[in-house]
Amino acid sequence: MRVEYFHFLPKQARQIRISVFMDEQGFTEEFDALDEICTHLVMFDRDIPVATCRIWLAEDGWHVGRLAVIKFYRGRGLGQDMLEHAEIHVRGLGGASISLHAQCRAEAFYRKCGYVPYGEIDYDEGVEHVHMRKFLN
Image 1 (cartoon, rainbow, N blue to C red):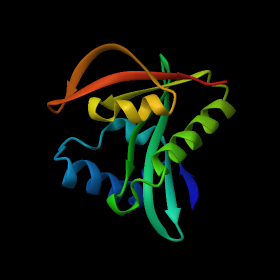
Image 2 (cartoon, rainbow, N blue to C red):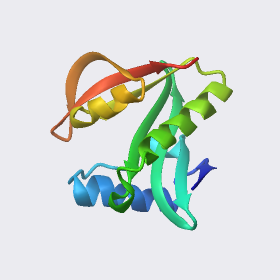
Image 3 (cartoon, rainbow, N blue to C red):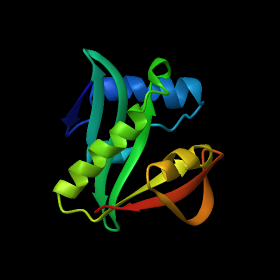
Image 4 (cartoon, rainbow, N blue to C red):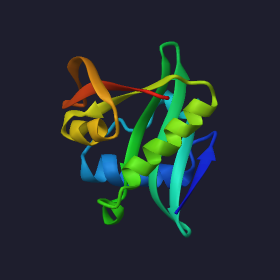
């Protein structure tokens, strides 16, 4: 597996997000203006795109989002690998923490990866989400 970094939304990341968030989960507002300013990470199994996420710096610090692994590749630790790549990249840019906005059903996964919830639960397209943060060492 290899991870490539893009300063634009590559077609491979777009395809993964359509498959996971739109086709599987029914989200309709998947793409937004943040895609234009993010660094997009795509993991490849040989030449097959299998996972993606995006990172960006906002006024309140670094964020990671749109973490997605295609169905066939789930359960192999690739989501955690993608987070680690994002964290290493942010740490290399001087970031001390990284935040995310997780679907509540994925909270246990992010806790396992060292993220801690904060704030109130809110909704994105009718789905419960929680803000989480990890301090980077």
